[in-house]
Each structure stands twice: as structure tokens, then as C-alpha cells.
Length: 61
View 1 (tube, rainbow, N blue to C red):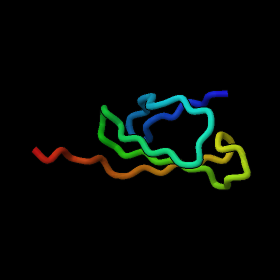
View 2 (cartoon, helix red, strand yellow):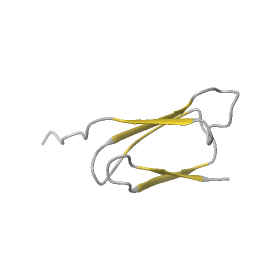
View 3 (cartoon, rainbow, N blue to C red):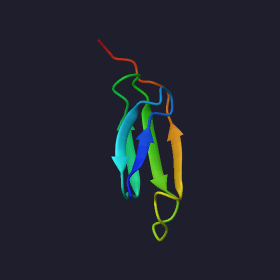
């Protein structure tokens, strides 16, 4: 079963994931670095996901 992974700042859909141990995606809309990881490798990542977000990254141009 796939689960939606959305940006923690702007809620844009970033991915649909089925299973992972660690996932890190930068949002193309707002620049927030979204990070999620399974709390335990023996458990289902979909049910034990912890999410954290970092501050948006500014472009250096």
C-alpha cells in the first residue's frame, strides 16, 4: 500500500512511498528539506514514520 509523503511546510505532494528506512526530499515549491525515517527496521515504515523538517534553503545566486 502506497502512502502519500507531503511537504511539512506547504503540503505539496512529494512522493508516494511503499516502504523505506530513510527518505529525504527537498520540496521544489518552497525549498524545505523534508526528512522521514522508520523508527525500527523490524517494523513497517508506513506505520512508524517520524517526520522532521528543516528550514527552507535560500538559493545562492
